[in-house]
Image (cartoon, rainbow, N blue to C red; front, side, top):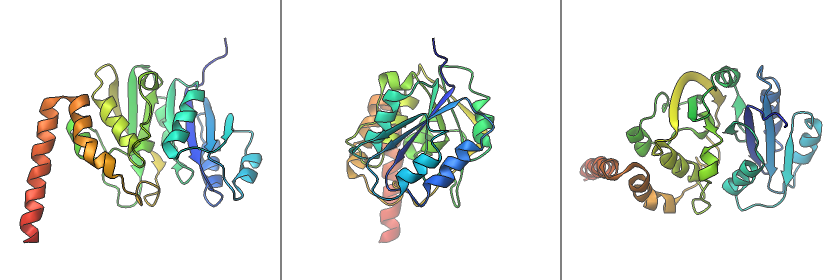
Length: 239
């Protein structure tokens, strides 16, 4: 039986000629080598394919076909992944040495491990409780998901921008998956990426329902109380 890699890195790509090479270099330079790299290219029309050719020695699987957005590409990558843990990064992200440091900590197949991101002005670091996650999204590029997560879940394509947030709300509510925070910087994250410049009104509308279904009524009511309190404060400041 072929040995499974420890980590599957899944990278959705589309017309990423200007940023992709640095991302691939950051993967190639990692001390930890027990990884497979799955790139899902949604049909780039720039020079992205030429970069694939130059770095084919580190690309395990290359999927090149049209897709229905970034989360559809991620789901395609998940289906091809064989790693014990799955890690998602964008073509404009850069792995830091902490990625390899975290890799050495991956021991329990029932545990989701997460660390920190390096980004200018980015403050949401440290441990995420259910309540903290209900209020704020965790950085997706800091998470190493055990493969069992995707035996039960996929990215919901109804959410065009925050399907990762929706997934994390569900996973944090899943008591069968332990969560462990390790204070190392995993990645340099680009704050000008896809989620920073796009809206997802459907997710915003359905977020309370996701919290109720995944985390229960007490967390749902606590979230609503806090949200309404902050809204009243905002309204009073406005008037």
